[in-house]
Length: 414
Figure (spheres, rainbow, N blue to C red):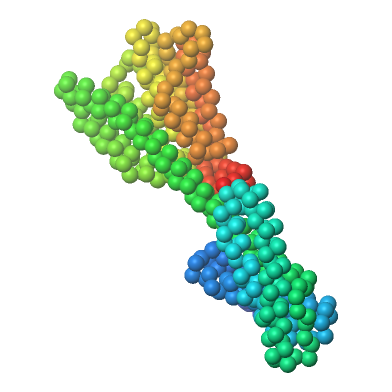
């Protein structure tokens, strides 16, 4: 029995190995097919349809399909006692007429009238051109198409004059390119509009971040200036911290996102700079909880709230000045609460700042529907609460997936 068991294992192992190799081979094969399919889709949609390089080939492919489809249709319908090859030949004779009749509407009426919202003018033009098509149909059959069939001595010679079947081919030869051209131009315009929105968002974000830098630098330089006047030995340390902040703003802040650890480090450096300046005049509470590693955030989002807190807590008539910064990370959610003492204002009057408005706008742009910003005026103190879902960061390149996509449908006529 033991020998038999060993015998079975001896024969079973190569079989399993062969099946694994076969499965891996087919897996690579189908993965390769999927990759080729994606590459073909990309070429077909982005290059072949829209690139000017393939303009001639697009027309060749379209008219080839047009001729074959109509030749097959007339052959199946048995409209005339001719072969499939004769139907293909007849349709080829009509291609110049199809182009003459369809392209003026495709390349003039659609972009100049329809896409500009001139629907009535476009409709009247289509009706007028349809009547012109009746004359073109009759003239071509009478003076070119039928005489050519007679000259080639075909068995079946069609009648001269107007014909509903050939007119149907003419109208479809005009309507199909018009529909294709409409959606092609509409898609291109939406792409251009989406690109302009992307550039607008990038410019606005850069402008908002740039508006944060002057105040930030002014406060830091003012701190160092105060220490230099006092010939304080702390001045070199202050300069070193400022150098770190400048490096952060000049290089790291150019990226759409920075490491959360780095952002927290900059916040702590700012608190240290302010503490060195004001000393024990301001009580500072600072706490960070949670895992901040391998997390990314848009730069300089929380720091302006801290600057604003310092600005309002240093009023001369405040008996006890204090600031509290509590930051916590839970998964991909960052919560930050900044509270500060302030002068009591009359009811209904709230402190405001351009920096706060800028950050609010940046949050709306970078984390749409993935952030919450609350401000509370409690009389003697002010609280700002920020909640950001880091995975909700929207790259500018993906702008069309959210807000742009919802507005694109409203721009059918431009």
